[in-house]
Image (cartoon, rainbow, N blue to C red; front, top):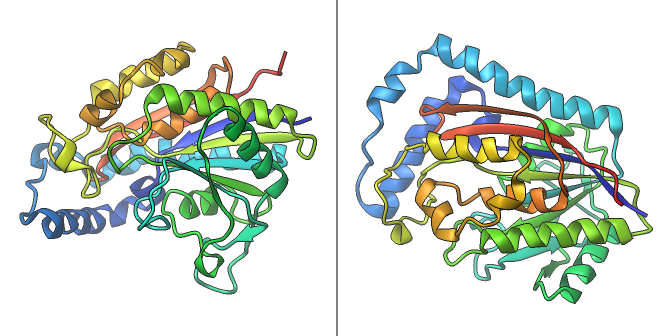
Length: 315
């Protein structure tokens, strides 16, 4: 039978880019906002000015080092599968938006190049999760193929290139709606994670499994559901205080308490992608993080965070 042995989580997008590119991509994100809403958003000039190149490099080394720890752990432990929980931002799901979805296929591409390594799926584990979720009254959309076998998701491909650059570990992508309101509640996301854990433990076709949450923490970018947002934050803001509250709860092993948050809480504080973390927390039972590294970067438009857990053995 299988076992969730590892938990990992990280922000994506700017978190996986060299800081030297952030200013260019931040401008592109502001221009994307302008195309959607008709005006270029005002920057958080004071915060950005305080993030000198030297300071950014020094602080980003901590994030980059944490990502390197995740990669090293995967290289050393080589789990049988990675379940990567991510949101989709109109990349694969455009005309139909599932609240939760799972890929069941044999393999997929995360790069347009034919020479890039193909990522193996894990159909046995994926089908076990699908069946367990449906039996638990969770409507999990089954995805059997992507157009041209290409999974187009900035929350998946860039992460896999960093944590498993050789594409040696089979991957089960699970999608959680984050940017389209209404979206699943924190309690529902946590429950889905619990069911995923049970499915892994009942699956005879897999051994050790890593669950990886991709997304967050606080950020207010062009793709944010602004038409549903009624708070005081503006494009480029970071709710550092709320980020630290979430991190404190996880470090104190109060992950289940975070399931009591509401969807309005997530929307108000820029935490809509924290849904992927809640799924992972549900699957990790009562694990205490091995580490959580957090650095807010206004030049990088987000509160960047990387975490790792060693999951307890099942009862």
